[in-house]
Structures are given as C-alpha cells and as structure tokens.
Image (cartoon, helix red, strand yellow):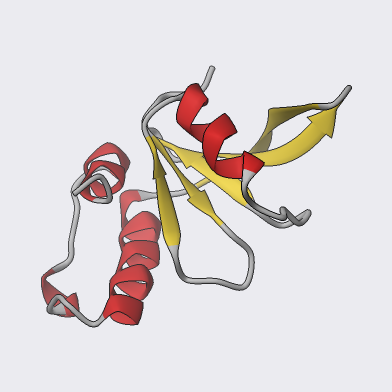
Length: 104
C-alpha cells in the first residue's frame, strides 16, 4: 500500500514533484508525457513504476526501496537546479521528512 505523500521523479530530470495524494498524482500525470523510467517514491521509500492499465494510470511497486540518505541526495539535486539553498545543510532523518520538505 502506498504511503502518501509521495514524490514523482522523472527520468533524466532532477526536478521532483510533490504529490500529496492519489488525486494529485492523477492530476499531475495527466499533464505529463511519461516514460518507462519515471517513478513515484512514497513516504517509506518504496518505489513505484507508472503504468497505464485499461486507460488508467496505475502505480506498480518495485523491489527498490530508497533510504533517507538516497532521497536526501535526490532533493539536493533538485534544489541545486533551483540554486536557492545551501546544499550541505540538506539532510533528513526519514524519507517522510524529505518528501514533506518538497511541499513548501
């Protein structure tokens, strides 16, 4: 079961998209051209591929589980692109805290 909130990681792009709920996921993905390597990371670090099944988007859980450190690195890359924060100060104790930081 998916633990919301989540973040959307698009392949080949450092930008991360905060997803508060499944409704946000559907809304955001409706506007995007998705590729096979795009994925959603939930608040416990589980990774999900995005697939279209019978005309509807579905999240398919993978074996990949990201640590708080790995998610912090994704957020560092995301913030580097924006160039607004000191990257060395970005550190989170939990995946959930890391993902919630994107909501601001």
